[in-house]
Image (cartoon, rainbow over all chains, first blue to last red):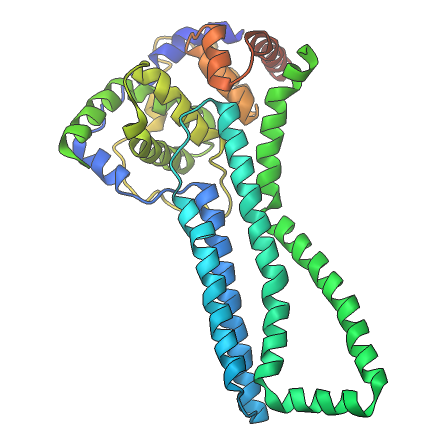
Length: 209
Length: 164
């Protein structure tokens, strides 16, 4: 059987289905979109909010266990940072998930989705790279007891400062690598799938030229 | 929904809803998939409706929005029951009553082979089966006419291999 033999059966397809009524259509259009692009942006936003919640929880636990004295400027800075992160992530990740559907051709649609998704993934990745280390630094400022202990240790022994710098120089790049891997592991396959489709469309176009 | 807009959309949608059924049938693997895709395409069509200026045919515009939605409607995780109970039975979209047993069997095999194609190939097959000219297929895909012909021939060969 050839594909052309299917044409007549294809034309008849769906003819027996009764037209959708007004009530069903209203029910459908009032529903939330299940688009994967919308879902992954929402997931990224939830990740950021969950990250902020986790930092707050850990700090409260540390403060309670260690009976630390609180530094007001540190606390204020931390609150500003939390609000800033969520404020940055909301329009970028949550609101962009409400973007209107593409009415252009498939190639343009794919290109548009790849570009916007890559931008959002970069934003998410950078936010994670700086959010947690910054929270650790601010957390130290907030926790006067630990900060004083570190200061004393450094002033008594210059090697301690070297060890701290060295630890940071090793741990931070490792952390950056982990974030990149995690972002790719969680969301990279969606970009890859879109790119595969895009490349498939343009492959012969390039050969023609 | 604004009342005038709503009735205009409903009228155009009802006239062309076969397109949505066929796309869902082609891209959805299970009944739940098809129902979900049907819902998603309808939502996207309604959201995009204000951009429909009426300069092109509604069906042409519908092909684009529906195909764009279908090719990027990735499913993952558990397949939950569709949220809206639709009065649609996708099994009914496939009617073999007019065919003898042998033809029916061959048609089923052909559909099974099409199911194995990727999203772009399915879009090509869909437009081809809709009897669209290569010029229109190329415009919907965003590629040149020559490229559309080359790809279509490749899909036909692939289907032949899958059937043998």
